[in-house]
Length: 187
Ligand SMILES: [Zn+2]
Ligand SMILES: [Zn+2]
Image (tube, rainbow, N blue to C red; front, top):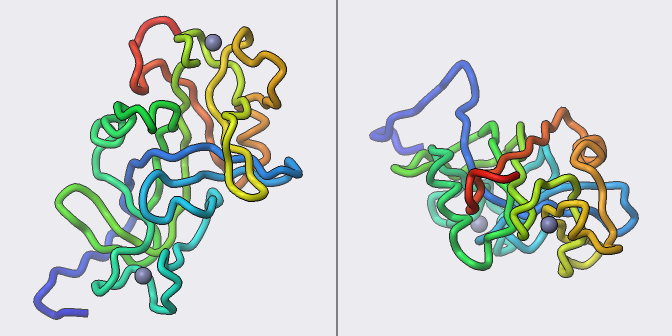
């Protein structure tokens, strides 16, 4: 570690915010999250360790690589990411930043994280979200999920928010909010 840099040793882990897509394994036994940027190839669990996204065998985070978990300092900045078309159906995660971390002006890059809460926005129709439904895409062995109201599920594979929390395990809380990239009213 560079001795000129300030080392932090907080009593409690820093809290970060990020967006991700909720994912459910095809056999319905595992639930996790898929990141939206670098590292968004493999879903991660509620409590998980980062691995180098380029397959290098160094410790994460490394100053010579940009891999690792990423999170922002502010909830508002993370929510801002859901304004782009491709991230409209992403959920907001509040995470505990664990293990070694590097702090940046806007957030953190780090080795290990625990997702504490997942906040789900409105159904795309702006109706009240009651379920997480198959979003129509995924990764090998995994379905991506998106918020849905009862009327918009239309026969898709779906599960309740509490079922998602139970399958994900590790104390995850799942909340519903009407404020992710949508009008705050109505859901
Ligand atoms: Zn790396
Ligand atoms: Zn709907």
